[in-house]
Image 1 (cartoon, rainbow, N blue to C red):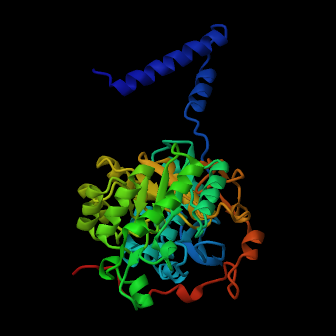
Image 2 (image 1 turned 45 degrees about the vertical axis):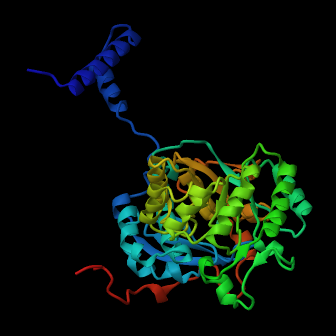
Image 3 (image 1 turned 30 degrees about the vertical axis):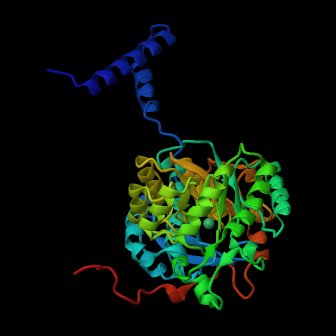
Length: 462
Ligand SMILES: [Mg+2]
């Protein structure tokens, strides 16, 4: 009879064990020793014997609204279970708690470890930009629970680390003075950052005659909400020369060795973007960001083909299909999802892998508290084509005090060490969070008014 490979190796292992024990026992091998060896062989370590994954159920969802400098307020959510273990998540900055709370009735009683199933169940309640905030917050919290139940960091559940620390990039506050811009950039470099961004748009040209061509009398709505293709606003040669003074000042201060990205060019037309991309070529920018709305794929492609300065978009995109369209068309050079909009940890990991296949690198947008920062860190650690993670709180000393259980400083010389604690790897610092609670709101108060489903939304097709 043929002995299978598995059985052969089992026999061999037992034979080696048996002979080792025989040597140790001076040849007096006994049945008792064999039985003891057989007992110790299958020992499994690092299992959290306090949890019972198959009977885990979601019992509650509560929230706290935190106010901080920069994009704010930020809503933290806590998903509780019947076994005491809870998960933390964060709604995308500047979105209300209702985006998460509307999901509560769809989650109560469910097993939180069914992460992909639950994401697909609630995906319909997410949308672009802040509209996805609730779905993504829930997804982060489910991963946090899974990590705590199985005693494992989230990055490991995604397939393991590509890197031990996550590169952080940041911009500075703006100034109307190019030299001041340069000085602030230099300060950032001295903090240890290895990647910089500058916000530079036509707003710095305000009041300088002959720099921007724009019909007089545009309403605030036209200037803010109308896509820039429809407001006939173009930058002139004089305007481009002035903008170049700012970039030159920054490069003079930080040198040409570190990547420098650019955001918030202002609402200008396609041809103006291309002309700026050409003018900035000599400053070797890493990318120009969100130059027109992300859904104009063909126009983005036109810009990307014509501009020697690379393009990037993605912080407001929810669906992986929309990222894939941009990547497969090479409509931008790089993508930039915000994990709190792009479907959470698993979807953003999938977006990165998809983009890798098209040869497109992925930076990550982020502007919230350390909770969603850690969600981004785990995803970045486990995703091959990751470049750098944004941070908007380098000047806020108490930002990192909002959480405990992680090595401080969280951002250390431009990098965040990937934590090895279970789940996200952070717990809440209640005292610090309460100091920054939005006035008039409560700290993780009960939310029974969101317990009941009030519409039938299981069937999305008939
Ligand atoms: Mg941006």
